[in-house]
Each structure stands twice: as C-alpha cells, then as structure tokens.
Length: 138
Image (cartoon, rainbow, N blue to C red; front, side, top):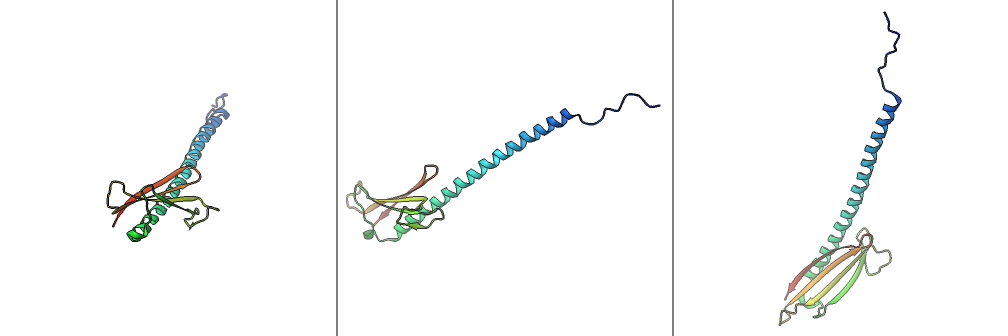
C-alpha cells in the first residue's frame, strides 16, 4: 500500500542557494589569491631585472683599469636609464629603470689605492631599488 505522504528526498531551493553562496565565496577567495600571486610575480620580475642591471654595471666597472675609473672623496656619480626589457640608454624618455653609479676614493686609504663603486637601480611603480657595491684596488 502506498502512503499518502509524498517522498521528501532531494534538495530544497534554500539548500541549493546556500551551496551556491559557499561556492561563490570560495571562488572569490581563489580570485583574490590569483591577483596577489600575479602582482608578486611582477615585483619579482622587476627585482630580477634590476639586479641584472646592477651586476652588469659592477662587472663593467671591474673590467676597467683602475686609472679609467674616475673618483673623488665626495664621489662622482653617473646615471643612465633602462627600459622595461633592460635596454640601457642615456635618455630618460620611456625609461622604467634608473641606474646610478657612484665612485668614491676610500677616505680611510691614505695612498688612494682603493675606490668604492656603488651601483643603485630604482624603478618606477613601487619606489623600490636594488643596490650593490664593490671595492676596486690598484
């Protein structure tokens, strides 16, 4: 014999709406995480490019003879610029990176046999910079 009460198995409209809301919250969290990861990757890329520009300039200075490196006790500064893909030029037009190289005589060295070279690369969009230094001896 059949019961007059209908079978109540299945989902109600409220249960479906609650499940959809939970799914939406989870997807929004993943979307936010993805945006954060993409931004972090962009910062890492710029930091890597800036580090490469710093190392290139330091190597360039190390390959020069001691006499070819201009320096004074107050420091002599030279600035050049680079695009976002790393192309270096003397013009700031369209530049993304600014590379500054400062050469100083070591004040503690009485015979002027050592020069300190400091290279700093900064870039627009974040106000970040990368710097490194080396000492070049006669």
